Image (tube, rainbow, N blue to C red; front, side):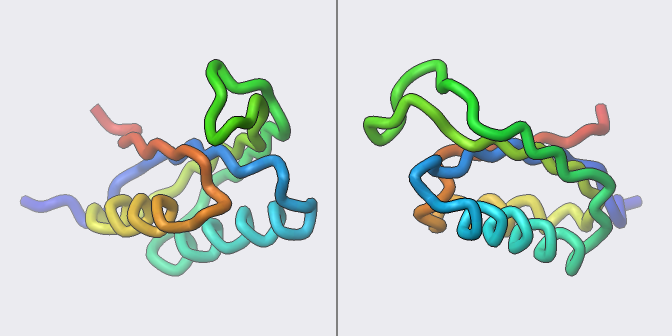
Length: 98
């Protein structure tokens, strides 16, 4: 039988040159997207941290970890939206279920 919902985590890095309002708007936007297709259990903003290697000539990024449950097709759509957003430097989505 096909799964109706799955548990996922997404870790994404926001460009640190964006202002506080723009950063908060991005976090809120992705949270709203996840809530529209499932439920968000946690949004943990880690803040600015040093990157392991420079990305786009930047040494820092604003890290956000979000845990959510959604239908299995949503993570691919979320990844697509993050990839085309210029404010997101990197992102990874993982399934929390084995």
